[in-house]
Amino acid sequence: MKIRQNARHFASRKALETPVVRSVAVSGLVRLHTKIFTKKADPAHAEERKDHLDGFFEATMDSYLEALRAGYSEAEAREITHIQANFDFYNHGWTEMMEFPADELEAHYERYEDFFSTWGITIADPLGEFEPEGGIPAAPSTPERLEDPEHPHAEGGFADDVYVENAEGELVVGGQEEPEDVDVSQAVGVSDDDGE
Image (cartoon, rainbow, N blue to C red; front, side):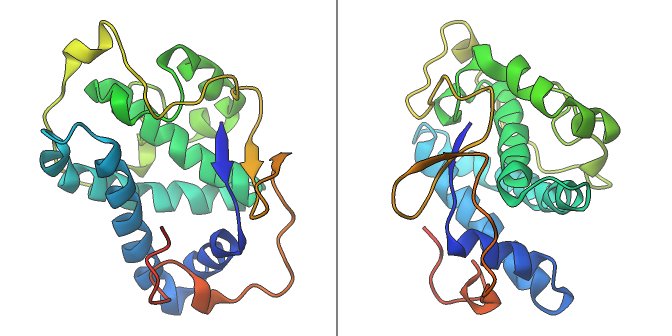
């Protein structure tokens, strides 16, 4: 999968790992991701998906932290959460929101199969054990889109590794090393900038 990585991502990681600012960072990151993906949604359905996306993205903050604890890099841990989201989008028939084509679902699952199987995550159950008690808000599906899926925001061909576009626009396989001087005040939700 192809993702971006810059100082802001490392600041957000640090914020999520810091008890005092974690809840602020979670709120900011959930807001940011819901905003990004509702913009990719069919405008006729974007509003009805917001509560579901909020709940889903909040749950993936825990999977991100567990992936870091398991030794995955920042880029890999974040990619894991994006793959979970794409499983969810696929299950709902929200193919226009997907970041990689549906025919790469299995390949992305297999790359992180150890982590996913540890936590009961499957393509059909993208949150696994990270699903909160009581679940997350439901949203209407568009299963008809699975018959001839359109992926206007998907980039195929990146299923074999994590590909990171850095701040200079260069594509780096595997991601970058964490900088030594991470400033938690620059994290999404902690700073005034919404991170987009």
